[in-house]
Length: 132
Image (cartoon, rainbow, N blue to C red; front, side, top):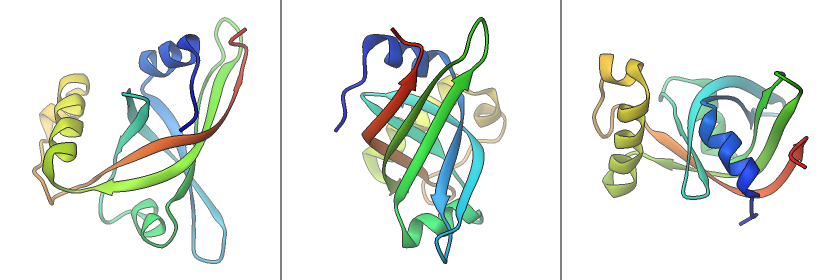
């Protein structure tokens, strides 16, 4: 697992929207915006079963994830790693608890285990800018 600086961790905890890249059949990248939570050194992302990203992850769990902002100057971080799909159990329950607490859209349209999974990304590589 790659180690993030305190500044990089603060940045990830402050933000909630990033772009997730997965690999489609044939090796074509697929990039979509997603809500996330940075928790215990990992990224947690809610997804749906009917999505292209979910289908891509079934055949290739390698992902890239970018969070960036441009005020007052450009800050960003690229994380690469492997995604684990979590559908039930204690990891699902903890991820759901975090999302329910942070996002009003989860509270407005709740779901249960087995209805929509989370993915958990453990960073293996990173690149960041302007955290000096």
